[in-house]
Image (cartoon, rainbow, N blue to C red; front, side, top):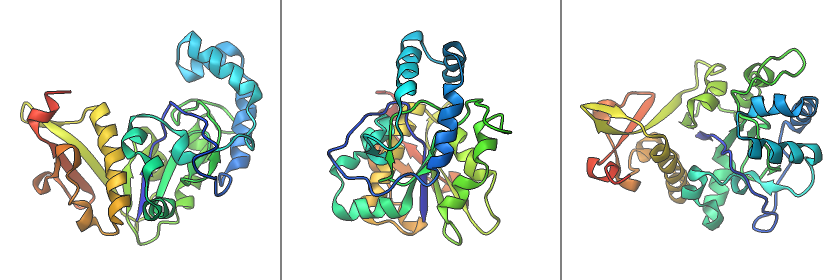
Length: 254
């Protein structure tokens, strides 16, 4: 099976923990996007990034000196958001690292799609950003079917642990013979299942760790996930959706 996750806004440089295995598959496309961003003014980039002046200035300065083949960090370690903190790939065992390299893919507005040990540099570009490049007016059109094609998913299911804005780049090109299995992490609120973004990010990271540590290859085994007090709830699930519900007493503490 293949597992898709979203990137994180927070990134770091770590050239010491693990060596990179390869350059990103779509590096030439990333170079094209870099050129497109460098042609924008500071105010245009700030609007594109939708961030504070402080962050915009930092990213603007970095953009001018970005070198896509220097000071590279394995993608799995480069992102440092909540999901990646709970995944904790820096302490994976060798078999777990082998598992994620074979099965895990990180969707990216800048790189399209990444394998865990592709070498990357910090960037700021979310998938929903309206960056024009060539004939494309946004990144969904720019990337097209390339991220989906790179998954090489044929008869195997794709486990969707990405946010909607990133999963959409795969969903719109999904072939009829391939199942995309949505994973929902929720809790009960007034008789309905609700999802909290922070809790969901934590659970997504834990699920990747669970899959890697247990060499999960079948959907039936994925239902055993019970970390962070989440439990598979069959009555809320469907053929292409697995729902895990968190105990109410736990959510009240967050």
